[in-house]
Image 1 (cartoon, rainbow, N blue to C red):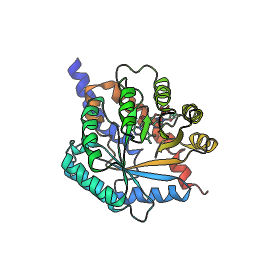
Image 2 (tube, rainbow, N blue to C red):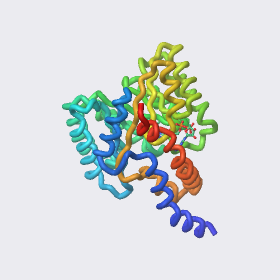
Image 3 (cartoon, protein in one colour):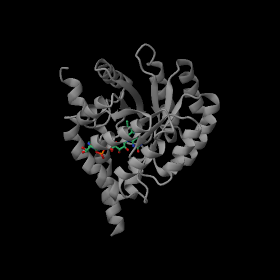
Image 4 (cartoon, rainbow, N blue to C red):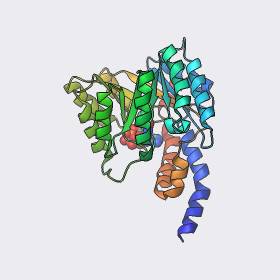
Length: 293
Ligand SMILES: Cc1cc2nc3c(=O)[nH]c(=O)nc-3n(C[C@H](O)[C@H](O)[C@H](O)COP(=O)(O)OP(=O)(O)OC[C@H]3O[C@@H](n4cnc5c(N)ncnc54)[C@H](O)[C@@H]3O)c2cc1C
């Protein structure tokens, strides 16, 4: 029976995940991301681009996509590149290539968060990377028990921090909104600025309020493809700078594929997400960006 379920999940997962992921990306090529970035900038927001690799992309190909992204940045008001270290297979050599170019261009390299099992290696590579280049940032998922300690780790290193709910919750996560609020409280008053990355407008409001009360500035980070209208109202209220994360690439949520095969609950989440996001995305950033100002 178990084998049958696994086979069913396996057959279903490819199209479902591809469809789910496709609603988040600007398009397959860097030019797609640059086009969206320009539109976003014209509306007064800043943009971050990030290549979302395919499941079978080699680390070399991924590094080249990061280098291509960096090469496209000068003269375009882009100063931030999101990367996924596991997609480089944690190769320090490849990362160093990226860091050297980023350093020359003074672009921040921001480490996205993936599964729980990736964190220790990511943090140790990041520690080494800091010896080469200090303009680095990191995302922490609020839903992991370990994240509060990881936040302390990043504060010690003065790394800019983005807080997200996290797409891969660990077993300790009970209430993602409460976890998010705890992570924000951990940062409030201890750092100059926090990147609040949630599309839940009420949660964003509470987070910005908490940060503001403690004298910490809050930025609002939004993901291209998710609903944004209510979030933008909140950002305006707090005069919080808004940055859009614009993924491009092969429309894969990295590592989700293999995880979904192992754990059908993730697949259900993605299925819900896929059905949901195709409707919602059209009412979110995409519609907002295509409608006249
Ligand atoms: C800038 C940015 C960077 C991120 N980087 C990472 C990362 O590095 N690692 C990581 O694990 N996660 C990352 N995420 C994703 C994050 O972990 C959450 O999965 C995602 O943001 C949904 O949670 P939420 O708090 O924004 O929204 P929720 O509170 O879950 O929902 C808020 C609103 O958005 C709608 N909504 C939520 N999710 C979707 C969806 N997928 N499609 C359509 N509508 C939706 C809901 O209907 C609701 O109206 C990032 C998110 C952002 C905004």
